[in-house]
Length: 139
Image 1 (cartoon, rainbow, N blue to C red):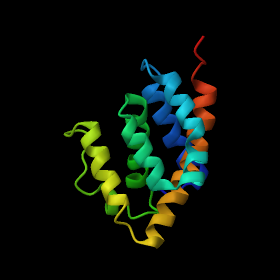
Image 2 (cartoon, helix red, strand yellow; image 1 turned 180 degrees about the vertical axis):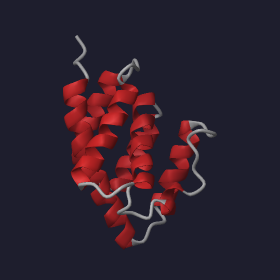
Image 3 (cartoon, rainbow, N blue to C red; image 1 turned 135 degrees about the vertical axis):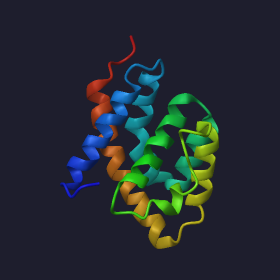
């Protein structure tokens, strides 16, 4: 990823994520979860949040994990290959890819776990902002 302001990188990626789900039937549920993601990570930790999202096994939860994993892969501030190596969302079912990502996060060093958590929190802020502004509430 080119050297742009960090907030610009994250906001551009978040915009792409929200645009990607804007025509899905679960977009309102995704919005609700995206708005809670940061607090979930702060309160429960990254691993527990990923386990919770994965255990729900619903499209909106799966998509949110995918967006996190793809961001880890994309950002130059992390060695995304620690988690994303051997994970291919194009060739694998999303649940399987998410399971692999979750397993790899549990194997991170303490230092890397903190970095992944920090990046996830930054992304959660932008996903919540953009989901709130771009996805209409269900009536």
